[in-house]
Every structure is written in structure tokens, then in C-alpha cells.
Length: 166
Image (cartoon, rainbow, N blue to C red; front, side, top):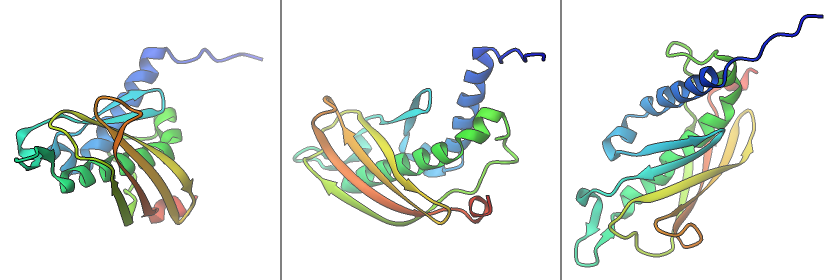
């Protein structure tokens, strides 16, 4: 029995990074807000770099609630798509031509825990449930200290039809 040699780590890392880049490019609003993603294995952290245009109330000053909600919804959508498409990324089957359809937001409930300060924000999403038709995702956002959240959210998503057939 001949054993296949594993792929070099760099090849796998490049494939993962390229898959994430294609996924992020599929959502134009990510570029508009300037949201970035850091990937460690299958774990993603979303980053919303501070820009003065994100301030909603200059007298406080605080991040605009809509920018915060959009940032967190983006983190949820990318995490959900990344986690459900992980097998395709790992096998190399995910390409520009085979990028799967994105989940559709059913509802998104925000909890604003404190004002977002004028600095970078970070978010991590966790998929609570992902079935053939429906998924539930929880998101937490912080700035300087991960244990001191400034917002959290729960989103429910309709999974794409092409994922339902599998």
C-alpha cells in the first residue's frame, strides 16, 4: 500500500488565504467599510479599522450604530460561509468560478452594550446551528479588551439552495 505524501503547509495556507479572499470579495460592503479578516486555521477575527467617517455622534464620540451592526453582520456572514465551505476550501474545490451562493439574512438582533469608542473594533462569530435550510450565528465585538464587549448580536440566515441539495 502506497502512502500519499501530504501537501506542503504553504500550499494549504495559500489555498485557505485565497479562499477567504474570494469569500470577502463577494461582499462589496466589506470593502466599503474597510473590514479585514485575520485567519488562524479555521478561526476568523473581523477587524473594523477606525475611520472618522464611522463616528455617528461627534459629541460623545461614538461609532455609528449602523456601522457597528453592519460590521457584526459581515462577521456573521463570513464566518457562516467560511465554516460551511471549509471542506471545499481544504480540498481546493473552491475557486472563483465555484464560489458558493451566500446565506441570506432572515433577521439580525443587536445588543449595544456600551458606546463604540473611536478606535479599531474586533469581532468573532460562532455558528450555533447550521442546517440545510437555516443557520443561527452569535457575534461578539470588542475594542481594547475582549472580555469587555461593546456589542453582541444574533443572526438567523437562510442557507443557499445549492447547499440544501447536499
